[in-house]
Amino acid sequence: MCRGGRLLADFVAGTKEKPRVPQLVDNLTTTVDGEWVVWAFKLARVVGNQFVPLTGRGSYPADASATCLAGSWRRHEAPDLLCTCGFHALSEPDLTGLPTWDGATPLTVALSGRVLAFEWHPGAVLLRAARQTVVRVGGAVITGNDVAQLLGEIEAARQRPDDPEGRLVRTCSKDPSGAGPVRLKLPSSYLQAAVSDDAGWCQVADHRGVKVPPLVAAGV
Image (tube, rainbow, N blue to C red; front, side, top):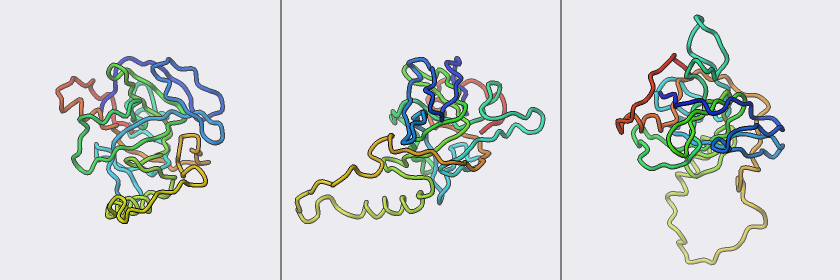
């Protein structure tokens, strides 16, 4: 678990009004409905149709709303400035040196609701958000409830050699599904998820000997 450095921005995404954020935090894109979301990256283990953070505490579905684990002593909505709750993700997709233990898989996610952005390392930002939609598992595009089916298709595709019969390619009549973030559509409702989240880069920083700020409170 890590918290990042100085707070760079505190804003709301998932509406048709573009958030006003610093250039460093401008990982914004629109959905098919014209709603602004934050494009971000993280690691998790895929277990059935759920995702387990590297902390191993809890799991979440492809579309989820975060709840804090801090307990009754200080109830608050996630994310909160005085806690580490919320869905963690990074602004940059750099996979160099990322951990491979426990079947960790890169995820591309769209963040919405309240989003907090913190300094992480030069050129990157650590994000904590209220809501999260998993858009890609590894390099494959998914939609909300298609995780298990998608992973089966990915595994089946790995069994097929490239160009096995020397056939010529043909072009598609339309753009492939998931050809760009513009095709993303946010769900009308999210399942609540109480997990202790970690983008994965936090684990990398810890293993490289980089000093990570101490945990304030148990969070999502």
